Image 1 (cartoon, one colour):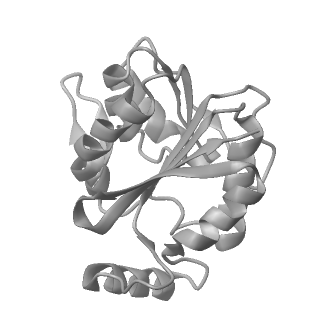
Image 2 (cartoon, one colour):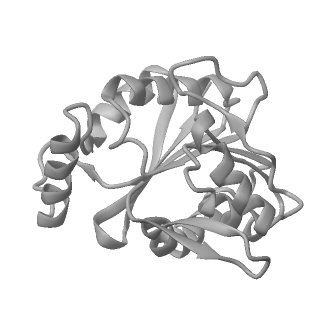
Image 3 (cartoon, rainbow, N blue to C red):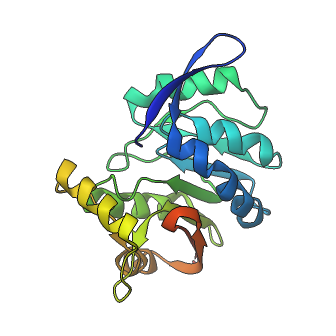
Length: 209
């Protein structure tokens, strides 16, 4: 995630801040309240700073929220969880999408602003891993900017995609149809494709078997 700052909460803990997380947390939680209304345990992939976990968990009190990310992000996540604890907010776990996934089942998997940062190979690993931990009727949900096969991108997304590819040839906005093709092979059927502010979307799938 881009746009990191530092913040200080009332306990004088220095917290890492992602501006994108700060800006998109309210529109996202409005949809997650609906998507996860019958969910009991969510695995978040790529928790980053931990801001989303700290914001979402207390607003979804009927479920447990499990943050995860690479080893080098654990300290940032723990800072947010320590500053803003919630009874349903779990200690973060180390998860690399292309390595072993948890044996614990989850009835939903959520990830925000990761598919354009991960290589396409690792996006496929993420979808495969999500399918592996979901039971029948489990939900897989992605938030972020995407592109479509036959629809022109918004100018801001074109510029963002260009910047991503300049930073690394493995990065870039992913085509929804290509993501869905992988998901369908794994028994995930698309159930939602919601337009969000600033040319983002929430995509959701339900596991059919």
